[in-house]
Amino acid sequence: MSIDKVIITFPSAIVAFIELVRRVLVSLTGNPNFPEPWVGCSLAELSGCLEKLQQAHDEAKYHDSLKVKYRNQVKSETKRVLRNIANYVQLIAAGNVQALQSSGFDFQKERRSTKAGRPLTPEVQLRHGERRCTIWVKAKALPGAGSYEVQVSNSDPNLEANWAAYCISKSCSKIIISDLVSGQNYWVRIRGIFSFGAGEWSVPVTIMSL
Image 1 (tube, helix red, strand yellow):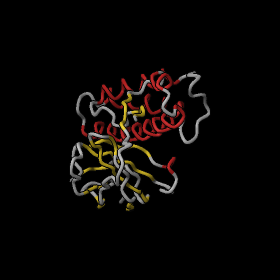
Image 2 (cartoon, helix red, strand yellow):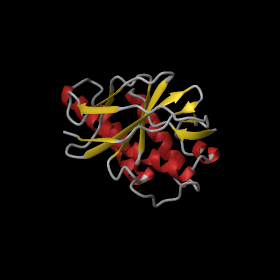
Image 3 (spheres, rainbow, N blue to C red):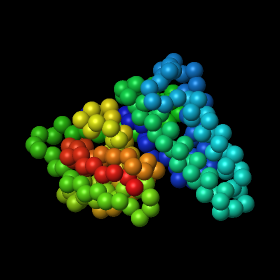
């Protein structure tokens, strides 16, 4: 069985990222599949971030260190807003391919296992990263897993709607979660992706971002 999911990992290149934000903004404006007002995010917020990011990018083109630092800060804030919108789009679309296609986001099919037997689950360890507002995630590799999906929650982990996709990683030995809020508690869970589909989620573990 498979389900279509929004890809939550965004381009690292600043120009490609700005193009994605602009495409999503245009695609979702007046989109009947996702009528506003939304819960926890808005197009007005994304539009404001895009305007600030474009200006910060233009001002940082001559590689002034302070302006580059500010541009990166604005980019991190824009990523946070875009990730919230992506998760909301995923929730409302509920696997509707036409709705996802109209959103401006990229998406992919996620295979889900129907194989009998008890799936393997990772044992997750968390620690603070070298930089502020980052978390290092580590788990023992699972036999047969080709990649690992990571989700993060900053509220009640018992509610499925509170989980947000963060990334899909080839390795689980060192995954860095960034752009967090200092002083905020975060929950993390991981599952392996196998040839027959996705395994079960790990037991959520928590840590406070510094």
